[in-house]
Amino acid sequence: MAFELLTPSEMAEADRLTIAAGPVDGIGLMRRAGCSVADVVLQRFPGAKAVHVLCGPGNNGGDGYVAARLLAESGVAVRLFATAAPRSGGDAALAAAECSVKVEPLAAFAPESGAIVVDALYGAGLSKPLDGEVVEAITRTNSAVVPVISVDLPSGVSGASGEIMGSAFQATVTVTFARKKPGHLLYPGRAQCGEVVVADIGIAAAIVGATSVRCFENDPAWWRRHFPSPANDAHKYSRGHVGVFSGGPSATGAARLSAMAAARAGAGAVTVLSPGAALAANAAHLTSIILRRSDTLQDALAFLGARKPEVLVYGPGLGSEPEIGRFALELMSVAEGRFAALVLDADGITSLSHRRAAFFEARKRPNAPALVLTPHHGEFGRLFPGIAADASLSKLERARAAAAKANAIIIYKGPDTVIAVPDGRAAINANGTSLLATAGSGDVLSGIVAALLAQRMPAFEAACAAVWIHAEAARRFGPGLIAEDLPLALREVVAGLSG
Ligand SMILES: NC(=O)C1=CN([C@@H]2O[C@H](COP(=O)(O)OP(=O)(O)OC[C@H]3O[C@@H](n4cnc5c(N)ncnc54)[C@H](O)[C@@H]3O)[C@@H](O)[C@H]2O)[C@@H](O)CC1
Ligand SMILES: [K+]
Image (cartoon, rainbow, N blue to C red; front, side, top):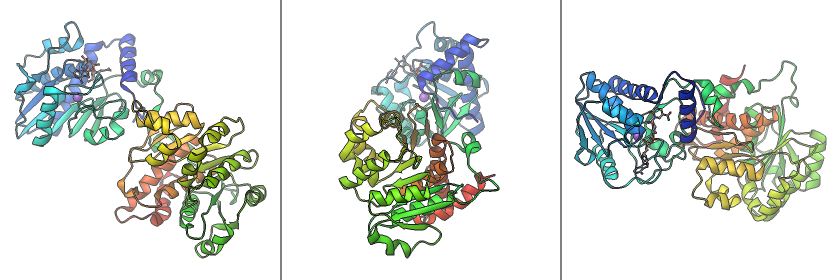
């Protein structure tokens, strides 16, 4: 399986390059696309009483004409409803000319029980919100609960952003071509797609690679070879050492969740750095995790000098007061030669929103440590208010813009977590689960990222792996999950990836 996610413009680029390379031409690609749609209809709904094909004015409609022709030739009862005739001379007009099914106006379409709807109204070319008779047809279809096969994208869903433009079909199956698009994985579009089938229409992998694509569906297949497993002669510190800062006496649990997750994700040693006032609370709950007092920057420096951790986690349970942000900036400024990466989560992010200018300035320094930020929607808006407020940007573009601005790896959390790095690469996670919407699950994620970075997994791959493993552990554990369950649930997932 191939994991690139092509935006509509990258898909058009792949289309052009394929046609230029020959021998297949535009109508040839359209015939293959329409044929794959007809195949899915015949395979999934062999007993359908009728198929109603809805065709728009562009090439998405062209795929619909091909599918209508092939289904009619297979003996299926087909009715075809169109918004307008395709532009003459184009591939869709050729496809329409080859299709002898009578064309009826879209206004005449009414979903019928036992019939299937093929939605070929708009796909990659959707450029403005749907309205009028198209929205009426969508509303009638969605409320009739008939199976809908959407061609490329459910009409109304933006392939680039997953936004719903006006209204969108609720598809049962979406048949897309060559590769998925970001809109198949980003919400709210993802919820409209149903099952996504990727049909091979003869666009070669080398051609996909020749486009400007920099976004991937997060999957172990492309980061697994970097997944760490300890060398035979490993000792605990060579496996990677993570330091996690703890909050005060009444807020110590978050750091322990992070620390336990780091240990389960393979860090050989994990130290909780605790304020003196919280030592007793932490000591009562920690066994294999090392506990060390740290009240000041001097204490932290002494730990860094003596124990040389690779990665620090700063944020869980710390509180969002400005001095927490100041300490984060101080940690970054003393990093060189002392630790390689800092994971800032939760309060670590919120507290920096009081010192944004100083933070962004600090991130420009050439010796700044690698930085991972793991904001959810609210934290993202506090640290990157300008980017968050730009309604023209998709979640993917927001994450990329934030990664560039903060010179950091961004894990923009949510049901469709986006991972982005400053060089423009990005991934969208697809195995998320609402089971992770539970207090403390973010603390666990920061521990996993830290552990993988401490084991020297490359940063983008480490962030992607952490997000996937975190969700996979939650899925396997199932309902009833609380954050305390996650570190142990990691064991099985990590074991499956190791060796
Ligand atoms: N690019 C490729 O590689 C391939 C594309 N194919 C199909 O071609 C589709 C893209 O075709 P097009 O670029 O022609 O785009 P569409 O067919 O999605 O729509 C384009 C047309 O709709 C109009 N339009 C856009 N939004 C509208 C709105 N809200 N209300 C009314 N009119 C609106 C545009 O002005 C244009 O005339 C893909 O989704 C796919 O189904 C396939 O045939 C196979 C190959
Ligand atoms: K469509």
